[in-house]
Amino acid sequence: MFSGKKFALLKIVISLASIWVLISFVNPSQVLPLLLNMNVFFVPLILIFIFLNIVLYVINYWVLLGKKLDFLSNLSDYLAMWSLGLFLPGKIGELGIIPLLKKKYRVPYKFAIAAAVVPKAAMLFVFFLFFGLLSFFSATGSSYEGPLAALFIACVALFFLRHSFSKIFKVIASKNRVALDLYNSRAELKSFFGPKNLIFAGFVAVLRFFCVAIAFYFAFLAFGFQPPLWGLLLAISLSQITAFVPVTINGLGVREATFTGIMVSFGAPLEIALVAAALSMIISYLFGIAVIVVWNIKNLRLKKK
Image (cartoon, rainbow, N blue to C red; front, side, top):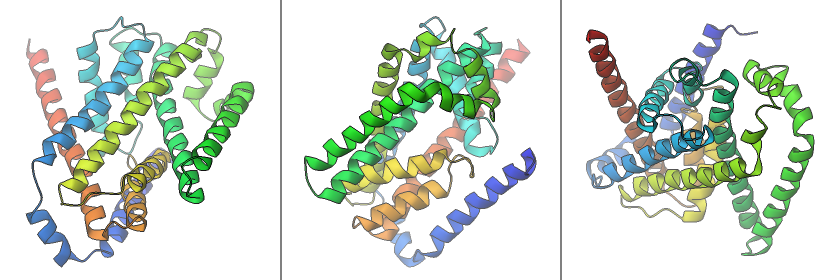
């Protein structure tokens, strides 16, 4: 069994190995002209939609907590947690806001967990739903049978989860402390898992999905290639699902490899698919570095006061 440090090291190794394997398939002589001729006009547009994706997540848990907290302060704190999560293979990231909600904003721990987990779970469900819809459409080649079949399966899955959620969650809770706290507080947290909140979380998750899609679409346009929308949405769905598997640093490497592979299968040139994925990733990391710097400067100024 891996210790925390060994597992973190394993995540780093897997991420770096995935990136190395991906780069090994690329011809550097074809990548350099693409980078030199990149249309920088799309860079700020990509950043805007990356930022909108983050804002929507904060709006989601802010609404779930009854809009009682200072929104801008929450956005600032979450941006810091998100940015740190890009570089640290530990537990900081989207769920890193939980201890801050508890300590800084005095939100009861169980409500902080629920507010952070519900949007994340809704996002994962949306990725699976779109992946199912798009996969069935691709398999049938029809504009009706595929989506209808996928929608039917999604409804069956929702029905199954609705009536077996408690048993499934109990099994998960036996292995995970956060899940255990949620399970033990399920009666008090009933409002968080009500239809109104789940529908709202699902709606916001769909908006976040399209923010990601638009950012990647602009990344391809930056290199003069118009990606096939069907392949782009499918690639985003599956690559983001793989990013949820906790074996890499925030999905780094595996996510890009999955995305690139699917886009190539839909006709995108390998080099363009890779640099488009890399561009979106690099902008995210540079934005994360900027946020960390600003957040530290802000905290240092507050300490001096």
